[in-house]
Image (cartoon, rainbow, N blue to C red; front, side, top):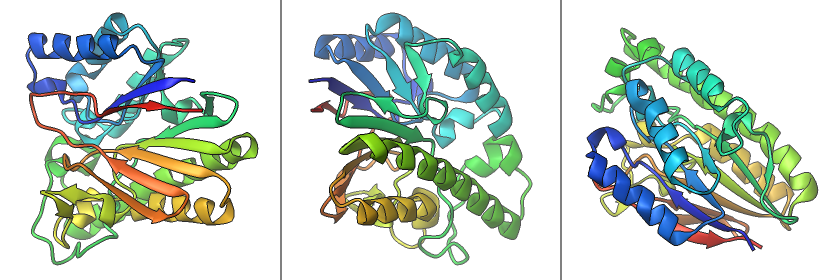
Length: 266
């Protein structure tokens, strides 16, 4: 049975080469059949280098999604275009939004979308939180509050649309689906300091649009088990909104990249 190692928010931009090497060594020592990365691997200027370094050091395929920090110092379109170019023809380094459905086994599928906090949970209009996204991602700079909200809505909806297509294909032939995404799909999965995010942070820590897609598919396919792996908030926790839908959020500390877990899939 395949074994999956997964990590999130490794933030190599805050790491020394020694720390990055130690992370790669931990992956090799775990001897997984695949490594899953749930976003925030680096920032735009160093992202391709970080991914290629891992590809060279890790003796298994790497399946990844992008997080908001992966776009810092660049733009959404530019980074996505560069990642498409980087991964084209590479079987050992695959960006899940372009990988369609990956059959890990006869019964288990892997899919993934980057995800984006869409502003719909919590109290966006009353929140005083302003993430660096609005200063360090080209398309999000110089937006007033209303324009920023509309942009978050569009980004979240686009991720949900892609996830809907992926899940529709996955459930046709698989009884289990592993979903990798950066942003938690539920407020209750957006763990922060040991509890679900409050109304100020929830608009920027979870994606309601992807959550609604997951609830729909879990409800329509009760015989299919859905496991969601995500990160973003740096707080670890689990949330199970339905008997066949479980969300695991990985914890993280800047400058200390670690594997979250090893998962054996039937």
